[in-house]
Length: 262
Image (cartoon, rainbow, N blue to C red):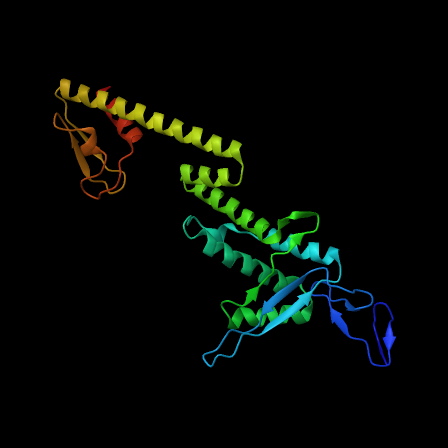
């Protein structure tokens, strides 16, 4: 006679039990009639003979286990996998979605499922499929959508770190973080105005060099090559080093010309 270790239910025909993927608790259909959420684990891939992939359904015994699992999945760092590729975002997000789920299972799940997840990591590239379950605290939001928003936020922050202000602002706007999008666009406008002011200033300083018949030699900060500044010099010619092709910062050039004229 089988007996459920959780509720004590028994039957002469045996009790069919199942194990929670998260806490490892063994339950039966009487004490947990329905899983509080399930995952579909892809344990093998299709082969050349046409044999279909193998899947294993695993579930959660309670809403607490379900929420604890997703909390760890949704807090998994996204910045490294997402990078700065705006066009390839969807591809990178799917990879992040699968890898974050698999990582959490491998590190925290019931031992049997964790071992299965670790084996899948070593064998298969497309090894995991998860249903986009809804958050029980807010039935209008899918877990997959939450993960995608986390990944999109990481994309926006990565773009901002790289100085791609306009691209970053667009992503923040898609996330409805309008204040942040406006802040970045105002910052970009300020940079453009500042660069314009510096360019005007450099042109004025170059004109003074010409008017006074002076000759100055500026060393490229990248390669050390000498750039001659005389009556034939122009802002366009001085934007890029003629020796190494590196861009010359207008601010550095302006500081040099002020020193040369002092």
